[in-house]
Image (cartoon, rainbow, N blue to C red; front, top):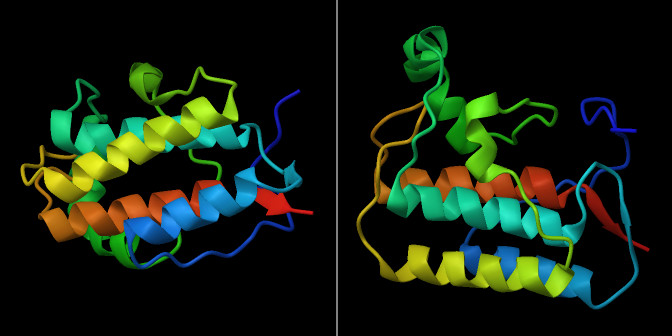
Length: 156
């Protein structure tokens, strides 16, 4: 049965300032026992994050509904500067962002490759909701997104 992630308590409150912070946290989680508070394992979270990061470089065929795109300029700054709220349901068209790996090391390897791409490739594609982002804005979005998801894995 799926967990209602809006109601989960005990999540870690994270604040990443760079991609290396994400990798350090993931490696620390992988080398010790932990509890999964949400619906995805550490491997699944890492794969999902890697897919979102690669989307920043490769683009996406996902199309947000028009009313969300209209409201996007009003909420853009909030998504870049504040913690993301859990429980957001991706549209059905976002299947390319959904994880399918169960192996922790496979997910971590995908995340490591995606972060390396973000560090080395300069070009960024428009976001499917917010449109054009600078490289720095894309980075902030990826950091906030990673904080939210990795907060569901708690070391024991």
